[in-house]
Length: 141
Image (cartoon, rainbow, N blue to C red; front, side, top):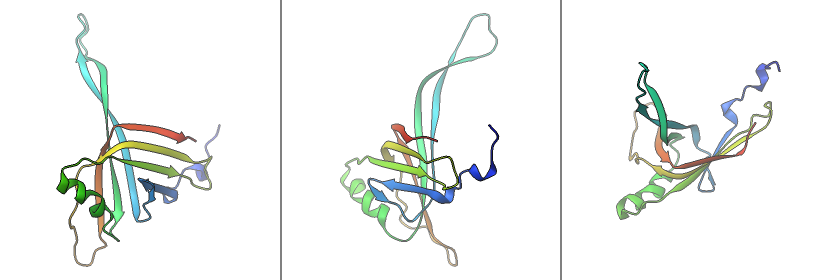
């Protein structure tokens, strides 16, 4: 199959849902899995072998600062000491692409809460780093 340039997905058509609410103020999202590996020594072999022993999920959502959404969500958890896990659903659906990709990221725990980060003359955004323990695709392209 030959690739056509117009089939490359434009991130403009991304939607991010947090616990069932559309994050209309979102401007960027990234989630990655890093494999945890341990060295395996094999006699007679000079190179190190590796064995995957688990994985770790991390990500970041960047929001345009238009409301106090994350403070409303996280501050009660932080002050009460009660851990709250969330669910993030992302969807890439460029109308020119071969379809839509929808991913469910589960057992999300946000790493911190930005109280304020502002500079004169600059638009304000908020970075929301998180970890996650589960992921699956509802739709793939």
